[in-house]
Length: 346
Ligand code: 3MF
Ligand code: MG
Image (cartoon, rainbow, N blue to C red; front, side, top):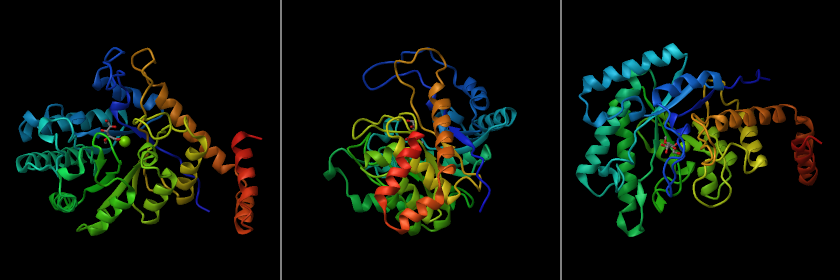
């Protein structure tokens, strides 16, 4: 028996937000981005997830030296705060040159922009002492399916992965699948797609997945099975734990807030696999409710972390031999009865 994992938690600065949504503007005073880092440790977090422009704002307009100087400042700031950068993600969904996606855009000059930005993202990651790049493939998809040649799009995605792996001999690429939004249909909608691309790449050991609970639920899939699939291939780079109440807009609810049993099963699968033993983070991607007053609003982060740890306790206090016994007898009625009572504290 391995010793229990002492989990490390991470989130990205976008998780502390001012409450804007597609239908209305900010409802809370802005909280300076640079001051967010001082909040991490007191909230129980030590890992920081970044977009490239969270590290270097306005990077498209900077020279390589200016970009690397800014990254060096951030590296020093992280060290002062006792924080570790977990990953950097190229933000390929804001700039007008990404309207049709980056790597799969039908415009050659826009694809060139996406590749240039991706190289900068990798260089920024290395400059802050981080080896993981997250690809949330946001606009790599279509609004109408006839818009792109999907076969060509998947080839372009694979070429991009290979070019990234060649650009830097040490980086890992963690693909974060999402089935829809902001496109109608996204390429790489599930972890199965991501891992197929990993094996097709020039260095499969360096291509993994990041599973967001809500994204799996939006694909009609169970997040714990998506995690288990990645874990079975030793390809779970990180997670974005959160929750989603059915097939509606992307909610990023608190972990466990919509469906405790689905959340418990994610914790169970991570615990069973010993996730975290090699330093992997428990990442959160949670949005504060728009009704929440104050600045900065952070309770959702502390609460999601607490729910995770309470579910870890539930897993560890479960009678594992009873579970084995019920599985072997295939008495799933008894298994469910035991588990639901256990979750209810009965
Ligand atoms: C998407 C992500 C991020 C987004 C973030 C802000 C790394 O689920 O995790 O990409 O940028 O949610 O929109
Ligand atoms: Mg996410």
